[in-house]
Length: 466
Image (tube, rainbow, N blue to C red; front, side, top):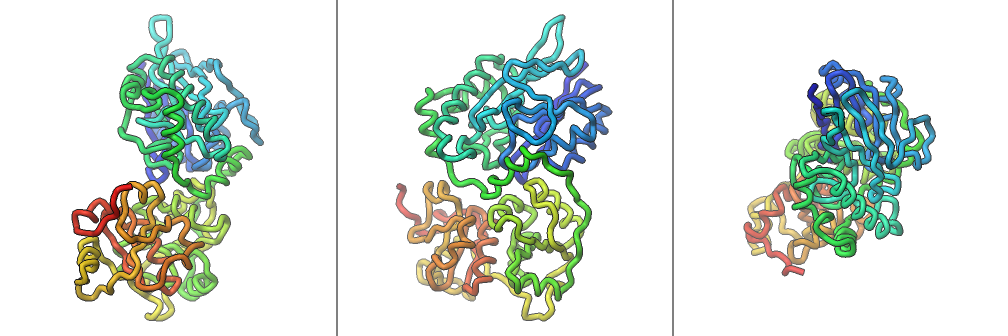
């Protein structure tokens, strides 16, 4: 018998779900809401899901655990201390859950990311005893970091950071160096205190690399709290949905909108989102739309920018791209877009005047413009707008730039000084969304589609280090 742990990655949210099996039965860990991926994997492996486990009530996505357990008839393991609106198998620190003759789970209380957070040690039967293979750590011990501790409110962050330190130490003391670490968060997720530094890890590697296992409690807490930046506004709705019991998803196609309807929705100030790559958006787009390509974390930024519950219309080249976007959105609780359209901007417009383009530049062009010699066809920058997050800005920024993080921009457009705005982020993805918002507000804007790491080398004047 060979135990296999398969990863089901959701890269757009920076999360992982897992399917652990002994060849006959399987355990699903922290499943995303679109559970067809889990069911497909179990079917391909010919295993039956008998247990679905949650490490915690998630704050960054709507869980598929309840629906997966309902469909498969599996036991649904959720912390006994969590107050939820559905039946589950309540578990707590010290519980041992038999899965099969060859597999069992040991429940370990690991508060820190949340107060009732649990980790699950996966044991394999061997020579009449049990050998720990690894531990599903959720938002506790991550690769090179830990889960952030402020999602339940800043007032709890200090206390939870101390819990996080103790929980990580407990796991390291409990398990051998060779035990695998299988976290849910940390691959770009805002649930992580910092970003993951490896594709896989073990307890032994974390002993060497992870600050939580290298620092004493007080220095760890200080460092952790100092590094926390803002997190998506939609997180406020995720824990509530997961505690209540999420409804099944509906991924059937939404109603199609013609050009007249799109014009009405744009005129009403609704969110009409162009899912094409930013280069295609810049070259030609329907005026009044916002560019958030499927090639990036579209759902994270859209969920952060909108007023929760606002109608959303999706524009894409193909129906498959709209379907992919729907899947991304249901994971954060945006269940049904208001409408959709596919094709090209010319098909979405009622008149040629409604099709526009964005002026695009790079950091070489900005450096030339700063030196008084802007490239032909480019207006001189009167404002350089940086829409990165605060931690990114603090780490280094352009001299004289104005800083408005992208999530704040819809409510702070009036704070951007008058004149032609050259806008940048870390890569061009967020800057495209910002440029579209500015253009929709009537501003003259230049999109800097370039990697920020190139700015200094290109000759852009940088602010002295803090």
